[in-house]
Each structure stands twice: as C-alpha cells, then as structure tokens.
Length: 387
Image 1: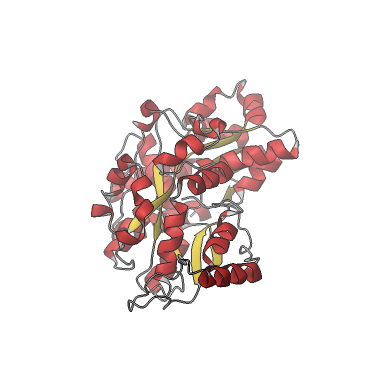
Image 2 (image 1 turned 60 degrees about the vertical axis):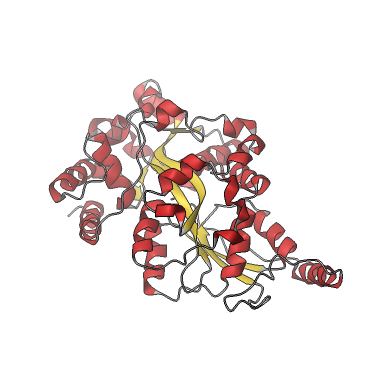
C-alpha cells in the first residue's frame, strides 16, 4: 500500500557481465536458476526477461542488480503509486507484467476476478521462511495462500512535523490520536503549514469509520456516508490529496501533517535527517488503532515469464535479501528468519514492528463489493472537489 514518490525505471546495468557469467556457468555445467521449465515443460523456454510492476521506492537499490547478476534475467521495473492504477491494468488484461504487488484487499477481489495464476509452490522453496501468523491472516482473503506471497507489511497513520505541531499545540502529544486529523478545530491549526491526505478512499474511508466506532468493513451506504461526512468536515484544511509526493514535502518542511503509509513517513524522517535541514519528522500509530496492510507478490494469469517470476519471488524471500529490503525502505517484512538480520534500530522501532498490544487494535481492509467501490469513488470525488 504503499505508494511512494515516483522514481524512474531502474536501470539494468552489467548485462555484459551477466552474459559472461551465464556463459561461464553453462560451460562449467552448473545450473542456471533462470532455466526452470517453461509453461510447455521445456527447460529454457522463457527468454531471460522479467517485467515487474511495483510501488516506487519499495525495494533496496542493489536487490535487482544482484538478482540480475545471479540469474542472468534482465528486469524491467515499472512503478505506480496507488492500487487503483494497477487494478485497472490487471482487469483490462494483457498488462505485460510478470509480477505485480497489490495490497491484500485489492488482491482478494482480483483473485475473484481470475486475474492471477495459481502458484506452483514447489518453485518457491523459500515460502518456508514466511511467518505462519502472517500467512494465516492473509488466508482470510487468499484461502490456502494459493495466489500470492506477502512482500511487506505496514500501517497507515500520522506523519507530522514535530516542531510545527508543538508550536500549534504546546506539545506533540496530540499526534498520538486521530483527533489531530479528524477534529476540525485541531487540523485547522495546521492548515497554513500544509496538510496532505492519501488520495485513496480505500484507505481513508475505513480509517474514518474506525475512528467513529463503526465497522471499517461496512458496505452499508448510510454508515459509509458518516465517514464521508467526517472527512468532508476537515476538507477546508487539506492542502493536497496525494499518495506519494508527501515523502518529499514532509522531508523538506513544506508539509506538516500527513495521513500516510508508515515506511514512507519514516523515509521522509530519514531524508530530513540526512539533509540536515532542521526538519524533524515523526510517525504515529494512533492510539485508537489503525489499518495494517499486506502488499502481495502475485503473477498475472497472462504473464509471459512465469518461471522468471517464481525465481524472483523466491529470491525476495531469502532472509538476507528481505532484511536488506527492509533496511532500505523501512517496512517490516514477513520473512521470520530475516528479523534478526534487520538493523536493530528498525526491528526495535514500534512504529515499524508494532508490539502486540498495538497490533491488537489494528484492522485489515475488506474486499469491497463493486457497489461499495462505486460509492467510495463518488463520495471521494465529491469530497475532493467540495461538491
């Protein structure tokens, strides 16, 4: 879920080196992990190409180059910043991608639409490294864990400029509650320093419902309207709706309050620290509870390079690779064996790896019916346009 500031497609360097390495491997009689049987059962049936569609800023810088060097598979890595974008491509068909990374609730209904290939788990031996508790939660929307593999785990919460919130309220304690966002008298105090909400009704409406004490999974129009009315009440104080730009704007101080994704906000905090610009960013999981989400690795049913996709998924589940990704993007990963390899300051950060008492107040997003989706979209358009 977890969109981030858009970055250019990752380059695929060292192709000559990769080619030489592959040739040497073949000459030595070694096994090339990319030469798995293709759909027709013939070894080497697939060209050494993999097309990945993922959120931006959501993988360590050396993960893809290392995979390319190890396998000889050339990766094309495109990015997006909302689940709605990738869903549109998947439902239209012929997306051209071999791996996509939808969030669990979108993934669940995409399974129902038949857009994914059922996994051949024998080709992903590193599935054994995954946390059984995570797999059990995911199985509620992917029975038997047949179609997807969890990539990262995160939460949606409050990102804020500590100094500006303190100046407005006398301390930053208020950032521990959704009251800072959803009470007009509070958010109004931060209007002039910049407020951004995620441009995703599938995040914002359930969170508003949860804050109101309503079922965040509700499909009842009257209940959903209550959430829309709450968000509409704070609309005059919202400067921007976006699902990626807030990383930069928080880091440079042009935004002081965000409802966003955990890892993005922590990235903004670190960017500000690295820049030495005096901007002090923090992330809060509100005490009332919030959404916890899972981003899934899945193979479209019409993928042209499924064997290469299996190789990449299996690679991402290697403990050191998973730990390297977490260390870079600062989202928790579900590979249990990777946790000891994660930097101590990250694995002990309760906003990244929440303790049990905090996790107990979290909810996952539901699979919405088409009618609910249409209602979400209509209400969100009305909120944003002020109509």
